[in-house]
Length: 310
Image (cartoon, rainbow, N blue to C red):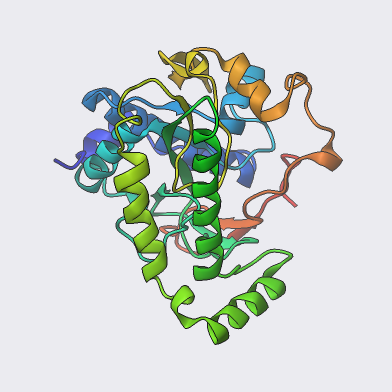
């Protein structure tokens, strides 16, 4: 049953216009999505945890990293599959599920996103987001062997999937767009089969049958890492993730790994509590955004990663 919009608005009010900058308004949109996802996960007993820069923000800043414009969460594969099915019918009407299982134009590197329907990303290095709403990323986690040669074979499987993604979906933005399009055209000319969607679908079906849902994956004995349908390769110690706990983020509580320190060291090294200088901060996911398409005259606002609108 869909989350009643009136009840959702009462529990999780839309505060996008309270932001002092465009970046802060984007963060407030994302925070509301996080709260709704957390509520639905709690309702259905779905496990998840904050990931990457979102977890770092919770530990170091008790909220968003001041210059960060995205949110990442991870779910164990079984919970991820349940979440996808639940979200199809229970998300409130102002949120949209975007998943590789339900949208042919989804980003194959990120199997699931939850987007706000009333915002629009106006300018971004990646055309995956252009013209679509502000979002949070949701990644599945699969279990990996701790020993060789099984771990090497699992990493090889992830590499093959990444190659198929690059062939099927040429870069639509960024510094290497021209090179990527040229490579895609070359492969299309000499190997038409590889540019069809079929190889990606075949590989995903193979991965789900033989890798994702194999006997070992369901034993609960492996080390969790980004799933076989995710391009990133980090793997974490099981005891650092489970059982998950709670952590404060922007004044609310969300699920987090059992040992955030161990997870953050895998991501950022031992000095993760020291912020990068401005010159080394990551590039933002988008540079201008329409915060509310419902406004009488919606206009795009420019964002910058120093927390001040340009």
